[in-house]
Length: 189
Image (cartoon, rainbow, N blue to C red; front, top):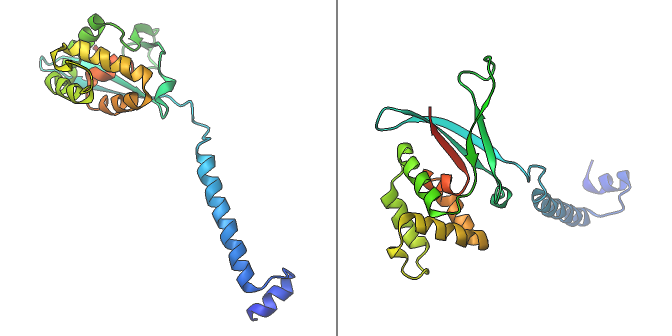
């Protein structure tokens, strides 16, 4: 059976060249439709958490929880509570409040969280140098204390989505920044 017989038999009324053009436009519209459908994913309000344990230099065990979301603004301004209990979730006993996760808004809280992050292997000197680079347009940023630099970065990120995106990338390298941005929790266990 040849092509000419094929299109007459099925009654398309089109020649083989026209079918190729129609197929091209159909495929192109399906591909473009797939890209626009991707922006409307049903998981747009997804928040995920990952937890691990770590031993500090004093041989103490710490739990470390990191939160994340495809849309960083989803967690912005939120305060979350962390509950836990000894043993397995199926063990008898009730869960108790272990702490809260929220974005730090003062240098005292930031200093406490940065000191806590030392047990997670945080390199505060490296964080300070990285923040100097990130905040290079801020006058005399190198004269600020580390908690002041972190607070300046957070305040800048709250008003500038591009800055918040940079901070979100940086926080995966710096546990102290993760804690200060309200994207993580740590405690000695």
